[in-house]
Length: 279
Image (cartoon, rainbow, N blue to C red; front, side, top):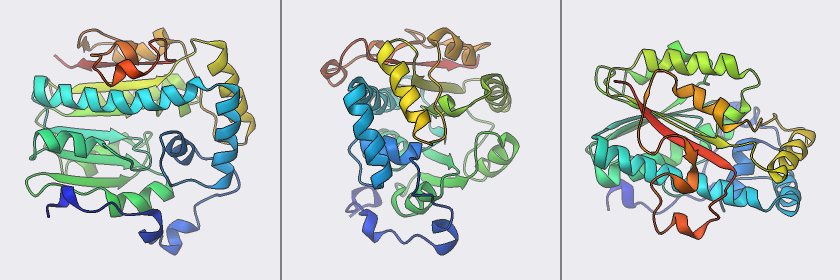
C-alpha cells in the first residue's frame, strides 16, 4: 500500500502533544474547526458546531461557499498541474486536513509534486503531522508559521521547494481574517516578489455580495471568534495587481473552469476566486 493509499487517521488516533493542546481554546469558535464542520469533517468542538448551526439557519448559503471552496481547490490545482506545468505549491492557511487536500490532488496527477503547508493553529499542527502524507516521488512538509512571517516562511519553504523554479502560492479563504487588508496585500506582494517568473497566485475568499453573508459575518464575529471580514470582490482582486490573469480572471467560484461537480451548487455562491501568474 502506498502512502497515498493509507487508511485515513481518525481524530481519536491523533496524539496532541501537551505543548500543543495547551494552545487549543475550546471556549470560543475557531475558523479552522468551524470550516471543518461545514465541509463535513470531524475535527471540531461543541462551540464550533453551535455557531455553525446558528449560521446554517441564518444563512444556509455559507455551506455552499464552503463546498465551492473545496471544489475550487481541486479545479485550480488540477489546472495548474495539467495546463501550467506547476509542480510546487506553497499553501498558506492550510486549515484542518479533509479529503482532497492540495498535496493529494497535485500528487495524484504529478507524483513528483512538492507541497509546503503553512498554518499556526495548534490543532492543525497536530493533525497535519499525522495526515499530510506524500508519494515516494514527491514531498510534503508543514510549517508552524503565519502569513505575517514571509521571510521565515520562504526560508523554511526553501528546504522543500526549489524557489528558483515556479511555485503556486495558495491563499484559500484565509485573507478574510486579515483585519488590515493593506498589510496583508503587502505581505502577499512580498511573497510573490520572492518567487520566480512562471509562479502563480491562487486566491479565493467569501465575498460581500449578499445580505445573507453580511448577516453571517456579523453573527460569527459576535460569537467571540477571530473576525472574518467579507469584502467586495474588486478589493480582493487587488491582490493580483502586477500579475497576469489566468482566464477567466477573478470570478465567482462557480464560473472558474466549471465542471460537472461545480454544477451541483448555486451559480451565485458568495465567494470569488482566481489565478494569476508572474510573467
